[in-house]
Length: 253
Image (cartoon, one colour):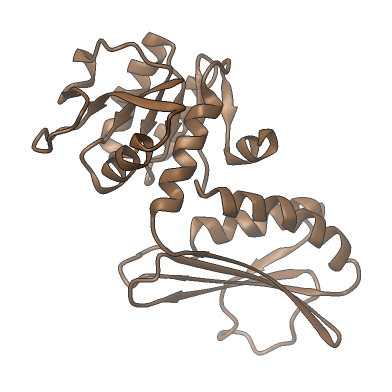
């Protein structure tokens, strides 16, 4: 049994994780942390993390960037592994995450979906075979109309996975409208689409002569990220200090 403290328990993702864990006999939320305690949960909720004295095996964090520094201090003090899912961290905070990993187990990934992280693994094998055979590589990502950054962090993670397999010899091209010239062989094109309520679609296209191979991932709800976070908490239970990501969870599955 993995005992979890849910940091940001009354947010949308926190409540989704609460529902998922309620149906999983291998994990239990023993306490929650949230600035607002307006929601009644089956576990105690603390508005100040320093007041939480409940024993646990890991923390799952889906909160705000402003709460992360205090969270890391708490986890280091109690030697608690942390699944860090909050985005928008500053460079200084990312440096703190790296420093914290010297004392506790910290898992942070560009995408918490198990499916996406399996895709990252598969793309390496595909790139090693298809790129030397002359296949061009393009990535198309689609998200809802409220997303402000482009390309998505997941699209960049997919490109990085491919490029690592190809000795980082490929250049990323985000916009073809400004330069009228033929496509270079050693480039990865990355295109972004924004519209409606698309949760997250990613297509990786290997286009060769007379054939096209496409790897696709579709997220139909944010539950896929919540489920990944729960799997990550189980994975971290008992792990020593270090920086982990979802690729480690996939490798151990």
